[in-house]
Length: 445
Ligand SMILES: [Zn+2]
Image (cartoon, rainbow, N blue to C red):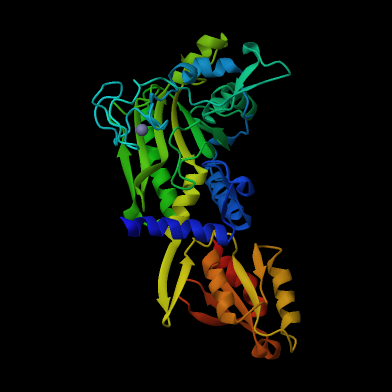
């Protein structure tokens, strides 16, 4: 599949060239599967996170925000089951020293047996029997590196929400059903990271835990499944590249009663980038038991006591950004020339508009600068007076900027400017005074 690889390669190359994503510590040869977001990438990801936050927290009465710390009491991970169960059986090749997940489909035969074949070096009988390996990053708190000082980098943001559930409930005066939303970093020492920013060891999650009365959990599960798909479609992602995958009983996590992945059709195949999970009362029950603190809810209407069920929506911010980039990436021919364009939804585009004086004389730079200074108070906009106008348009196409505003000789006479639309290439003349309103209308939603 050389063509498939090429699309991804070209996107990775564009991402670096235009400042979306860089390899971490590149001048030292890079750190495996760790990535940094450049000037355009940080804006794109921030816009996605802000849009998520607005739809989850600001536009709803029944969800509160939280920002819990990455480091937590180690007992959290005992109670959650991560310390014991958060493991992947691994297999090593004694010949080539490569390490694989024991369920790697490329392995022929049963690892540990003489007939098993290494997928890299092809040796037979060199694969070890599967061994367990904890995916949590371990570090030490304080000056002494002993067992008593061990803490972990959180492998999911959800537990910070569970241990704060009573604090938030009481301080916000919410009633069940209600939710807590959080955006933050999480860490997993993945064995087989890869596919650019898709699978990384450090990543950012956008999670919302919705606390409900037992018995109403499946209804809420269905509600949030639909809501999340609607939100993704609202980002402009092509619907034919999105689908649900329901977990089979074998796939279900230890805490889940029902779960759906939302998958996207990447150039490297259908892959999960968000999940909706019915986590039951597993986590809160375990924390109540382990901490000895009551985590029950007293229903003020019925005076019933219960431990709430939790419906979780868990999205990867990095994966969502990758989905958005892959989905937006287009190569096309315009006037006999190839153009590469990122068709971002205007609301999440890193730059909303670019301002171009046609030439650097005759009052055009002064007028352009005035327009630019006015627009930048409201939007992230870019000023570019270098090179031919065609080249300047192309650069903004690659950055995914929805509007190009050109100030020409006519502008200094009658106060109108040309607005070029990235996707349709349509050009319209708009009064400079009305630009802010023109853009605001098109950047909404
Ligand atoms: Zn080998």
